[in-house]
Length: 287
Image (tube, rainbow, N blue to C red):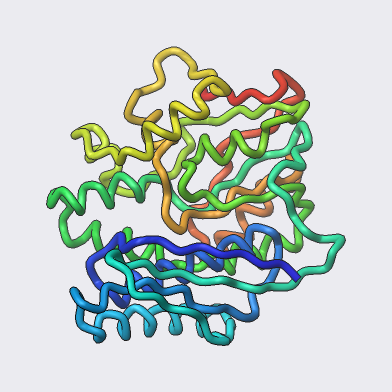
């Protein structure tokens, strides 16, 4: 049995979509461990004096619909009155003890596959700034609400050594967690990174969330940036993601087949973004 918990404040205006995104984000931790989520409990903080209860009903409905999509049963939950709205889930899943995936079992020669594009934090900042258009708002909302279940299912048939989901620490922050204390290093192919449309444009306009700079300050001593890397691309690699994709570490000879299988399953933007090296130890090199 594996358990996880995650909740946060709204990142989109629509309560129903917020419920879906929060649920998908919480379920993702189970998928990243190679497990199957089965039950969940709601976690709610709601400003009852400032918001109509119908808002909460729509949030819960979004969460329930996403859980149904994932085959998860809602068992109950707990709510408190608070000045700031928050919603999320405590999730229970299952996996065979010998098949639990950690985020740090790197093997030199492995390839790194990312299943969702980067840039949701930047787009959400642009939304708050009133810059993002309705098309990109809809696209990024659906991206964040998308489950990682298909990717998790497909990778079961391949020699995967490690996995994590990309969330608040950003791509480089989560890569740092994978390589910290390891004898191996990681090379990232910056030109291969999948990006949310307009993420480059908005980041270039300064629509970069504060968490990006916190992530960079915390982990930049582990990262070697090649000369000429665009500072905007650097920011996107540190950009805190919400309900991001899985980062899958698989043997090099199986990587292309895994990408093809992901594409066939509907995970169309999955791509190889890097590789595991014998050295330098505990370092990330971005080229």
